[in-house]
Image (tube, rainbow, N blue to C red; front, side, top):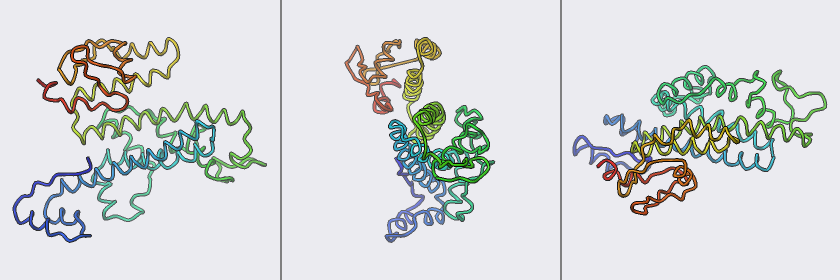
Length: 306
C-alpha cells in the first residue's frame, strides 16, 4: 500500500528511471522530471505508515503497562505517540506538502512541535475529515497548566524530580516513586478515562487517512464505522449501552452480503454477530471477517455495485 505507480510521460523517462544507480535518490529524479504528484504521494504514504507503526508500538506497550498497574511506565510511554507522532500525523493530514517539504529539505528546527500549529492542524482535521475533536484533545496533550493534562503527568513520569512550576515536585516527593495503592488506583482510573477519548480521535483520523489511500468501497466505510461505534458503546453500563446503540439507528443501516449481493436487514442480533466475528450470510453462508477492519467488500465490489 505504500507503493505508488508511475505512468511515464515518454520512453526517455522510462529508460532514465531504469538506469538509476543503486543508492540514487528517487525523489530527486521524480522532482527533476516533473513527477511531483507521484513524489508527494510516495513520500506521504511512507511517512504516514511509518508514523502510525511507531505510534502503535508505543501505545501497545503503554496499554500493557496500564493493565498491570505500572502507571509510571504507562504514562511515560504515552508522551511520544500522543504528543509527537499524532502531531505529525495531523500535520500530514492538514498540510501534507508543507511537512514533506520540510522533512526533505528543511532543518530539524523547522520540524519542532509548535503549539499554535498543533491547534491549527486539529481544526483543519475537523474540516477535512469531519472528525470532532473538542478542546480537551489539545489540552490533554499540550496544556501544561491544565490540572487534567496528560502533559503534566507524563513529564513527572519521565523524571524523578521536576522543578517547573506546573509540575514541581513537592517536598519529600520523588515523582511516581513513593505511590501507595490508593494513588496507583487513582492514576489507573484516570488513564482509562482520558486515553480512550484521545485514542478514539486518533483512530478516526488514522482510519480516515488510510481509507483515502486505498479508496474504500462506501459499504466498507459504513460497516466499519458502525462496528467501531458499537464496540465503543460496549464500554457503557446498563441502559447507557442500550441508549448508545439506539443512537446508531441500526435498522436504518444499508447492509448487503459482499459475496452474493443479498440484502440483509440489519438488527442488533446481526450487529452483535458482526462484533463477535461470527456472522454468516443466511443466503449463501459467506462469513464476513469482522474481528478487525472489514475488507470483504473490496474483494467483491462488482457484486455489491451490481
